[in-house]
Image (cartoon, rainbow over all chains, first blue to last red; front, side, top):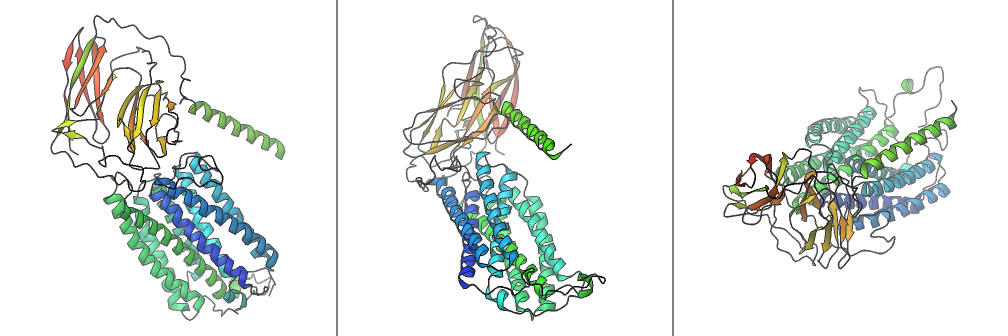
Length: 318
Length: 254
């Protein structure tokens, strides 16, 4: 094994405090995504017209009424998420022995900084769909990073010796997992563009069956072949459950926003609840697929012959 | 070419891009900064004509949507939306203006500002007409903060908050634009429309559906009737000297 160089290395002791902190950050980020979705669904993105200040102040809490409740709450949760990520990056840098984990934590910090800047830009440029959609997509990317960090610092990952099964089927499960991530990102971009009025609803709706098909294929393959590997089975089951929930929520969101609510004089509660839930479950679904992809990469490696060119045999890091 | 030269060139291109954007967006002026307009074309006051009429709504008027103002206890306005206001078939808030027929005539911009008042967490008036470059004074008579956020197509967008008892905000728009939406992101039901035209020949129908446009020089005109939801209808009219014609219009439910 090449110590400290791969995801599969067992070269760091389990740090319970760091893991719990990472789990907390992932939970906080999920809360942040819900807060951001509430801003969009309540059309409150510009209720605080300035940035980085709020009504001219960096620290004063404005009168929390109307759209300001949503926008300023989102900003406060985001500020805390930024601070938590700084702490996580410093802590990981000092405590971790796996170099890639250090870079991952720094990458998470860079992502949250970019996300904050995008959030500011979208306010300063009056919510252009492209910037707002990028803000939405990076939010979920950051969430996936925090979930991955929480997983990598967890006791199972650090202490467990993975059970390995070679994948001989085509397409490979890992390829399917990557394809799932790709179609989910496309769906996320289409949905975000629709939510931010940069695109019609139909590309997002038309792509939904594609997402459903690819994710079902991936999860069923994982369950039918690798059900005995718990680390693969659990995210696969979760993906199926979340997918059904998400399709139902998407239908509800379509009804409340497109079919019934397109003429609404103000954001209505059923629309807000269904669209926010759709965003939140979408984030969970993406994170679950990312977790599955990582676990497949760990437990169901590509066979030796394919991974290592015959003339340069090197040990697989399992 | 070495790397530094490329960086400098890219920087220059970026700066040029920014300055172009600035010149494009500088069309929207702060109050009092309107560019000097050419002298107005004289109109003989002894020949001017007028056109007036009533705008009707055919069919049963839709029930106004109810507004829920509970998210801000300071909002105590009437809770009926003003999307379509029709009483006994008379349609209010229709913007009527001379769309075509004035040729290359130019007109003085009124020095007096028109007023938008925020009261009861609603805009008053709901539909406003204004000339390009004419100042608009925006007041807040509510005990809560509003933000005023026009979302134009051809003018510059802006978004400013206005706390209670603060000084009025003065703005103007440099380009013609019909039914320019203005909204408050703090109170998402607050919405009004500003109509920016280059001539002073416009009116907004009152609750009785009536309008009147006076002082038109004789000529052939296209009169446009625009309603925020029902769209636009155009009518042609020929006005002789001192004519006073009636031009009614009717909108049907969608």
